[in-house]
Length: 288
Image 1 (cartoon, rainbow, N blue to C red):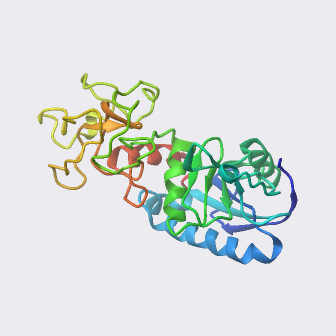
Image 2 (cartoon, one colour):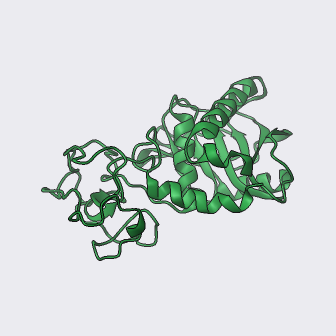
């Protein structure tokens, strides 16, 4: 329906660790919430901030972060449902991608402009969309729903938006359904070669060579025996092991991720050591 169907009503600094000029400023925006529904949005933001604060490595870097909550009222409730040809008048035009149901998007240009207008030193923008369906995305602005996994989705999308981390899923439409088949995603296509958590080959040194748990161990740590589907094998190494696991960036074979599990692959798992290192390097300059 287009953006700005509604109005911005107030901005509140809910985490204050000092001058905006010196801190990493996170701006939260609501979309698809009518005025009577704003308490639901505020509760979702509170839940996200609580999760944000206790999740590694943000727990150790929390003094670097300020958080603003911007209350935005939309004309209509919820988000667009393009698969069913339902349009709703919301401020940031949030909608699910009809080709991939869990991909929740918005008008990121409008979101960034609104965040910048409210917080001039904005470093990261989130749009919280009023839908209980699982979904999110991480572009110039990150989007997540108010699903039960909302806070974890938000942290995953933050990995994309500010740290340029790639998805470590070994499948596209089937997510992390180990053993699931999917045509067209057999071999990694090199679109994420620059991402710090994806290796396009096993050529040494790897991007994360310094973080390998056992540099002398053979690579890959796991190899997918059937490139027509996700690798179903469990992790042969202890939790937290850093090596090179085949299956990443939505492809079954050919691309490698650092660990068997990471928030960039399974949203309610911790970030792996490689992703934690990238996040820490990004936030350290903002520490008091």
